[in-house]
Length: 225
Image 1 (cartoon, rainbow, N blue to C red):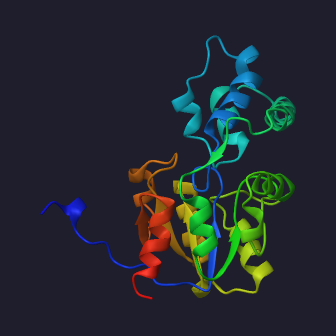
Image 2 (cartoon, rainbow, N blue to C red; image 1 turned 60 degrees about the horizontal axis):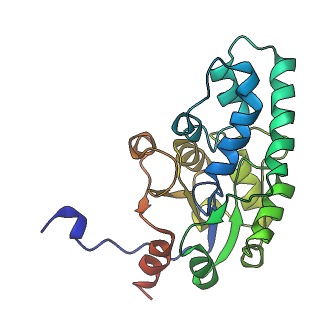
């Protein structure tokens, strides 16, 4: 029997589930990378490849923009970030969609639910509302003026808002930044294999669980019920 066909262990039920957004609940790379390409196109000699830009999703925009233009000043980088936010919002999430099974998983998964995303809270709330996911969340937490993942701040704020301690929580995300932030926050982590991050990068932070689809989180939690 091949390893991939072996039964997978159940994921224990947690009082609180905290979700990353991009690459975990929403397939939003086309809008995010498209906005970055549009903003940076006047500043690069040739178009930036989609796969290259996708690797930065989940990190602060500074990481991408500094990698592309390390010579830019702080003022220039801030101007690019401002242009990105306007451009991204203007796309109206037309190329974004929930991953298959996300709605069903959120509706049926027991426990309280919150978010921990690099997006700001207002943008996060708006995009979840747009796709009919907002009613499934007890709290929406974005990165609002404090350090982004891999710093643990957004997770700590999310836990505080729902009155949880680290032992209560499972954090689900698709990037190494997610897994590092989860470890630093003291929560259990679940690595997403259908998103934008690379498994090898996430493995450095030893996720407690892995899932290959959103619905797998639900079915493996319900195995023990």
